[in-house]
Image (cartoon, rainbow, N blue to C red; front, side, top):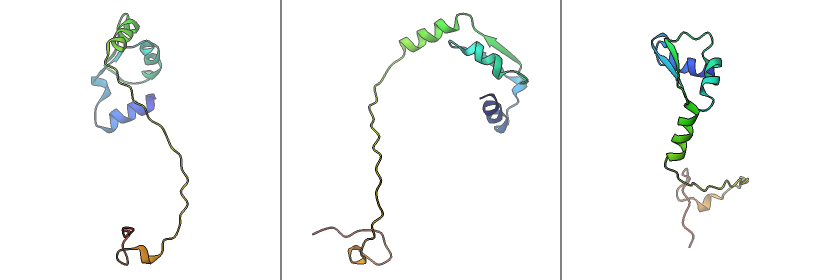
Amino acid sequence: MRTAVVGLVEARGFDLASYTLIAAGGGGPTHCAGYTENVKLAGVMMLPYSGAFSAFGSSSADYAHHYTRALNLIIPRVPMPRSRWRRPGTWQLCSRR
């Protein structure tokens, strides 16, 4: 994760030495200790009671339900006769009559 974040920021042309990382959330300060090792940052800010603020933010946020279903199909390739094509060389089918 550390390599991905540092690489992304440096690829965009930003200098990490001029930024301060804010560690928030339930496990943010713990993870931040591992991510920032040997990374040249201006500083790391850890907020007191960050777990409580994270829980409050997630409990007071708007919510929405999304229902999806995946359908995995294997569609065999079936050759189609040229008589069902509109013009030779196109992939558009004629309407059935």
